[in-house]
Image 1 (cartoon, rainbow, N blue to C red):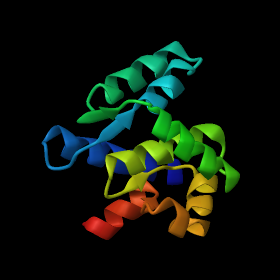
Image 2 (image 1 turned 30 degrees about the vertical axis):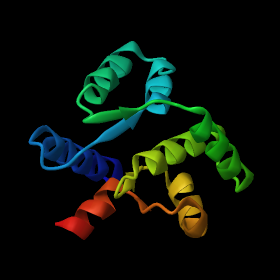
Image 3 (image 1 turned 90 degrees about the horizontal axis):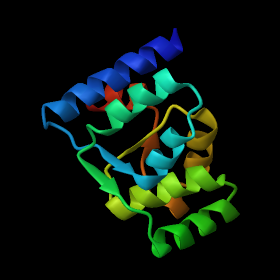
Image 4 (image 1 turned 45 degrees about the horizontal axis):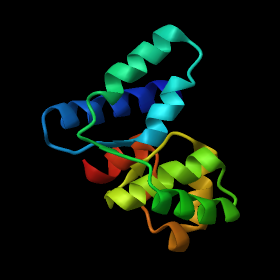
Length: 127
């Protein structure tokens, strides 16, 4: 049930992006993650979704350096890159369905300086 509700929340968010109500920032870290998706049908759907992003952040030396600092807090390398890209883009919210990532982000809110939240919970905040 939870996965279904989260998926519906993500679809609602994407609809708002398509209507230019909200901005979706993607990154080269997302592109990398999609490229590693083993299931070709899923990968094709993810590429289609990612192509709807309003903006894409390119990985830079500064992003990698910041990600290294986040790894020292216990974030894995890819999560640290996602967070560092989000900080570089100065997003209002970082959305993820990864409970482990969100828990760690809450523990280190002062260090990451991002509002990291589950898409379903965030929609409940803003609607």
